[in-house]
Length: 350
Length: 152
Image (spheres, rainbow over the protein chains, first blue to last red):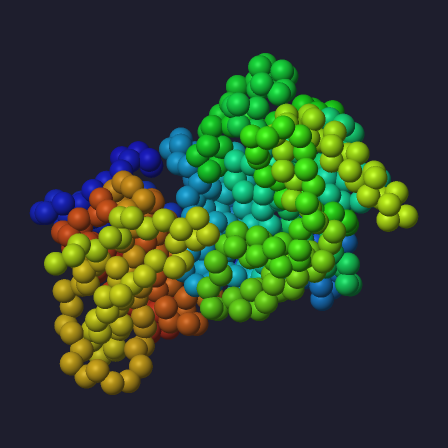
């Protein structure tokens, strides 16, 4: 019987086949120090991860995030077993479920991850293919891990994009479908450095807010092709949330600078309107708090500290200069308006 | 009687489905230990000896969640264990986790898992996990699988 067979116990067949099938194809993984002799430390979005593994491929894959072992500062323990027996033939999409402080699920290709948010552990079994796949680490494993665990280890994921102009971080927020990603792509084409597109990860360095990105691709919906002719050469694909979209590497597509962190200075809430022009309206702190709280993932009672930390981050964000940007213009014209607006605002402030 | 709408759970801020309500509750006696079960589908209340004594804490609590968006049939189980957790994945049709310190077990069970499969396969499996956890031998279940299989 092959490893990827599906079995279904029904009626009398159940007792006859149960044991045999399971003996042949079940896998057991025990996480302990003996099984994971290789160790390293790395840093993602301000979180310090201590990694134990049995695979050199895993060590090489986290190389880009490597950092010194700062004793006592660890915020996350990560244990990863790589096993070539894990089946990569079955094209199972990413699938996660949780209860209380535990979250677990399947991650393609052929991998399974467990998150313990109270004990701040990540344990995973990866296929050999996943372990050495750069795209798996950059676009799936690390963003999902920080997205799920982040708030418990001092990194709050919030739904907004982040760019940087002359050392000042600029956040683009707004409801789904408002056009944040196309505007982000247009702003990077004007020379702003990209920190993040869909999700930005916030931590505190002393009392200063830091916005982190994870080098994730920019996700553009198919209609963005009317604004970016370059997309005609690419093919949209089904993204993690099931949407059909272009996922483009910003460095290649836009050719602009990509940075991993910035200090946010301004927030723009994007609203589409049918009226022509771009209009900037001051946004009060209460509205900013309301927006981010309303769009934040629900957290269970066990994670009361994480909830409190997220509230602190949102309150800190809410005192930044913020505007609602109502636009009926193309992403290019809107990005031009933002660029001029922040320039004028800086002069006015100065 | 109004059918339970476990098939319509949708909350964009709860993509992990941590907040699915499990209003149906029962308490059972399993090898002398009280085991509490809560679920969102009465078909997942197991046919086990009910505990008549309604006082006192449960030694272990099961939370069985019928998940309409977990398709497919049972696949060969994959066991992952550590000092604090045991997780068993049988494809997306059944994912279960047991926290040995909080004494809580939860399982997401897909709609394709019918009553005979639940009764004849999953309930014995959950009972075995529970007994091993309460006896302080969380790995016993794995040994049990090999042992049973060898004698089929």
